[in-house]
Image 1 (cartoon, helix red, strand yellow):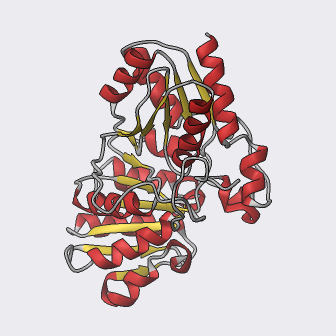
Image 2: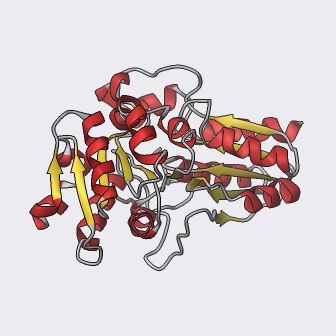
Length: 319
């Protein structure tokens, strides 16, 4: 069964596609925006902006460290650079340059990592960004956003360009169900409650939001009422929403397409420990690298499914 079927969601597009369309559209409104790409504009979808604004787009080739350093220089001259590459290439290859050229001097650079997670499928583990959120969150002053569908991605892109300081926007390759309407609200740092419930809360982001909604529908059939939060901003996390979930539902499941350490699960655990400690279960890719394969097959093998969330929900309720 496809993601979104159990919760009645409509088909949607890929978040990377939505980003590319939004960036091109916003180009006129934000004349200070420039794009720096690592020769993957056809994949990150920055090529639409480059075609519309050729004097504001720079392809530095397959040299991610240099790409980030160039962006830092452009930011120091008053530009708003949008730096785009695969999530693994950007955060893993250029981490030191992000640290020294972007976050340490608090430059207004927007980092966009596409092809995140294991759902890129056949491209294989060398290109799967499974630790990128952890790396981005570790950098002081970095805002980290993981939108779940095309609508929220377009809004996140606009919010990112208006926000002062370093931002990391994480995008995916596959098409995902449409969760939001065109007039839905998106505010950096504020979670969106997609479903009410009082037995437990499922906190998710990225493509796992649709999976979480499917799981909530399954749990409802079993007599368990699950709240669902789209925690699209990992940093700064919406601590009041997490605290309310812990206090009101007494159990939490965190679902993310990321490794077990340093991502959304870690951020939620820290927030819960500060407010209302409750049982927490985690659904993620674990402490391992994945492999090359069919995207749906990989999500199934590594437990990023509604059934796994249902199991996790039942385990925390048993506590």
